Image 1: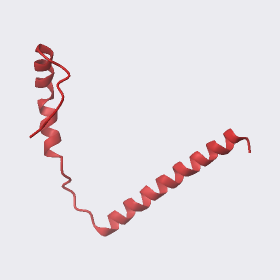
Image 2: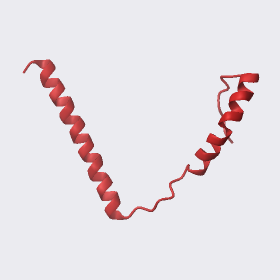
Image 3: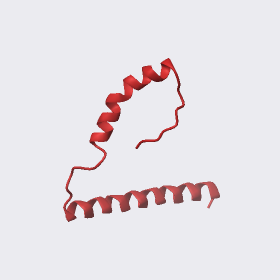
Length: 70
């Protein structure tokens, strides 16, 4: 059962509710992934995630050294 807070009431709620029914249907359809990943793909995605974190770390380090005035 779905619980949600009702922020909009009355005619506006009806108007918006009708507009978002299709979006809710699409979200429900694609809630679970349908793609099977091989171990090689999982490893490649892990490497990309690690590389991204490394780049963000280097960016933060560069910012810190510029601000600190080293």
